[in-house]
Length: 310
Ligand SMILES: Nc1ncnc2c1ncn2[C@@H]1O[C@H](COP(=O)(O)OP(=O)(O)OP(=O)(O)O)[C@@H](O)[C@H]1O
Ligand SMILES: [Mg+2]
Image: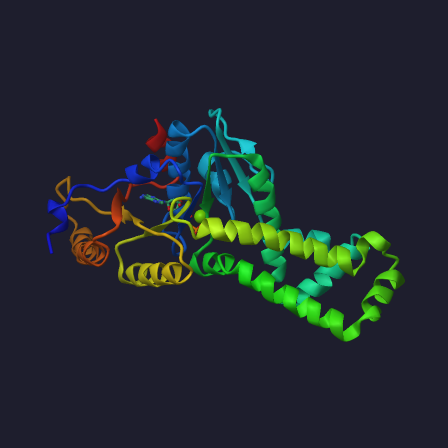
């Protein structure tokens, strides 16, 4: 195995060059630099694409911090750009807002409560439906830490199971379902067929998107990590899960890399560099068919994205 120093510096150029890409996921363990990397990627993409949307699906949003601008669940133009939009979606809040508003929605949230994950799946589907109609040339996802993202990719099957469960309830209780909707003062529009229709409609969208997610021409997943044991381990787990879900991944960004350009005197820094080198070597060995990009650890955090832009 060649030493990493002998290898050409990797970059995300392959992502810029892949014009067919529509969905770019950026994921990894908590705090490794997902928001930073997805923000930079969306900016780079905005230079080569007609329009770019960056979506944060992390309930603890930080796109607003990265761009120093408030974002909501509606796509908003990022200051200083003409073709880069950002939005932050939060599945859990969506569900709370719905509670008790009108008959059908409280019914839906009752059902949602009975089927773990279906509430999130449904708001994710609604969001994708919205985004699908908006015609962005590429959509970048700044995802929540790993576990959450992997769940998100399983939503189609959760929805499918949810539908099956509701259908079986319907068959079991027959007319009772309709009587109940009448009892709660829900008109024809809010009856069982409307609920099933709504679920079915979203299932169509999510199935369609799911097909797109599994098409490597349209979708790729960029793994962000740091050169440490746990992160290497987590990355391998992520890559395996993605393979299981048939989602393409061939880019790894290793963030927070220490470089010894300046004469480093500190024993602590030297020791950490040695440790990083060990894991960097392992990354290059394990993922020799990936595009690996290294990003340096910078002395300060907050304005680092800004500096990158100047
Ligand atoms: N290479 C770097 N050098 C210095 N600071 C960095 C670097 N990369 C990220 N940071 C800082 O580390 C913090 C975490 O980065 P970021 O928010 O991008 O990570 P994240 O993976 O999105 O985190 P979370 O899992 O909490 O969403 C931020 O304050 C960011 O400015
Ligand atoms: Mg983040």
